[in-house]
Image (cartoon, rainbow, N blue to C red; front, side):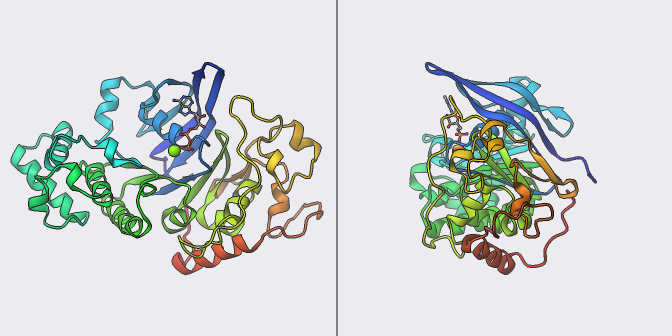
Length: 365
Ligand SMILES: Nc1ncnc2c1ncn2[C@@H]1O[C@H](COP(=O)(O)OP(=O)(O)O)[C@@H](O)[C@H]1O
Ligand SMILES: [Mg+2]
């Protein structure tokens, strides 16, 4: 690896105790976020994406990080005091959550929310902070920012509130942005606008970004690398091009096949059969095998949980599937029992990616 990553999550385990037993929501998760890089984290609802982010931020409620580290700029976030973490959140680490209604204080004017955020982290006068707030609002596309800075959150639409959240997240020039389903609560046309704002904010701040989403289109547009989660586990990692062209985990392929990939509103195809299993009582062997088209009841799938097999160290390409080689476009040592399983779903994504992200980037990692 060329440079040290900005954030290195290693072996993270987060558990919740419930009346029915212990739920391991995050199960030995490891991934890196390089400087300036956007890492997309994708997976069905309940796969542990949000809990991973909350763990790193020290914001897990009702649960506990029981193992692992999150090295940020050389320090382990999981060992920092509450006070130091508070300093980082909204400072070097900007956060954008799904629902700005719960993240904004309803009784504070928008301007005050932003100026407090600025003044909590930097020694800036009230007047200067207010001027910055107006500038920030204008930069995220809030019209008449000089007037709107004095309004309350309820006077803003959902999309406008999310723009305010983005403005606050970048107010202190973060090194890392964590965006958890930043557009999920918005309707489709507003989503596109907010996305554009987010992309610009990211570009302007050059912050590394963790983008949590179940929206594959969003990943195709913004992510440099992708981490696929299933049942609290990382099941595949790779560059956005590798993941979308040649998924090497049946679950990733299932996700891609379930959306044709041509645009956000495209018709949804049959999803992966079945439901994600209970975290309390996950299946033996590979946690995905009961829903897997590739397993065919093969014994290792039922009995041995696959490790995260490294496919290419240079691009951090890895898959947690015993038979990932059978999914290779050119399956070197494949048994050849399966014809090319790539359906129209993956082909559609490949075309989309070629169109919107031409010139395959040379990723460092
Ligand atoms: N407060 C909680 N108490 C018990 N279990 C929880 C709690 N929060 C999350 N979980 C468990 O963690 C799993 C992962 O949640 P989450 O990270 O929010 O998923 P997602 O990938 O949709 O963001 C959930 O399926 C749930 O079982
Ligand atoms: Mg979530």
